[in-house]
Image 1 (spheres, rainbow, N blue to C red):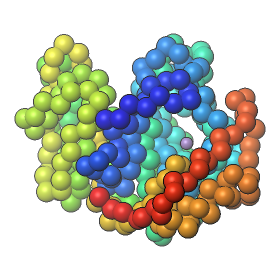
Image 2 (cartoon, helix red, strand yellow):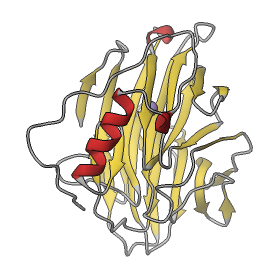
Image 3 (tube, helix red, strand yellow):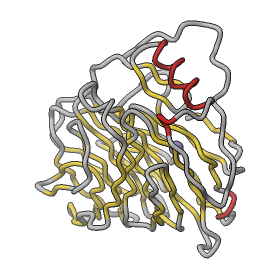
Image 4 (tube, protein in one colour):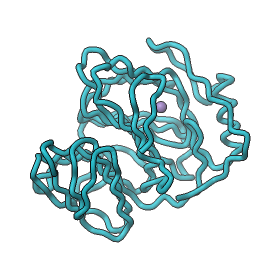
Amino acid sequence: MVKLTTRTGIDIRRTLPNARKRTIGAWCFVDHFGPTTQTESMAVAAHPHSGLQTATWLFEGEVEHRDSLGTSQRIRPGQLNLMTAGRGISHSEQGLKQSTNLHAVQLWIALPEEARQNPASFQQVTNVPEFSFDSIDVRLFVGTLGGHDSPAKVYTDLVGAELRIPTGKNGTIPVSSTHEHGILIVSGVALINGEVTPAENIQYFSPGISEIQIEALGEDSLLAVLLGGEPFDEEIVMWWNFIERTHDEIVAAREEWNSRGPRFGQFKDEIGGWTAAPELPNLILRPRKD
Ligand code: MN
């Protein structure tokens, strides 16, 4: 787990990518921020994305999203904001002061070759399936699980779900044996298929298992996020806010954003300004898989 302190002033814990694992399915980036009472300190000025989807999921609070498609959309707990960058989009995010706490994850999904150059789009999903496995309360924000389907539009075979378990309780989740999985413990302590997993850790499972048993240990209820999918076997170059396939594509994306060209669009918000891409490292970025 990498602890980042960003310009937003909020500590963000990044569990993916890490040195041992770059992707889980097409999930390629897991940031967990909050809980914090400094709800307005989350103010991320306009910045671009390419080649990925951002999935924003709140546990507490309220965030306003704006983007270069003209979208202005508030998100609350139980709703998914899914932004598909495709070839290019820019957006900003701001925590709203009327909420007393802000607590969320932001997840990135790598787009496969056949979708990565698509036009950008934005989807808010408010009818997220809610169901239970034994004492595990599930909100399925992406993909298919236990015969339920999320309406979120994704481009590879994926699953993403919030899990809540009261302390001392447990349950068994049926999972696809062709998927790899990770369970991010947001708060509490979990016993997962017999292994104790503390908060801010991801317990990883290779393909080949068909169920995951989880129990909430300790005094607090458990809050976790299940991420899974078909192993993503394309080689990608991930740099700053871009996912491309070659060094030259990264160079082009960076130059187009910093010159304020049309590829990433523009929009107005209350934060103001925009975030320039940093200097590229003095080396050639190589495509890689896990
Ligand atoms: Mn972003």
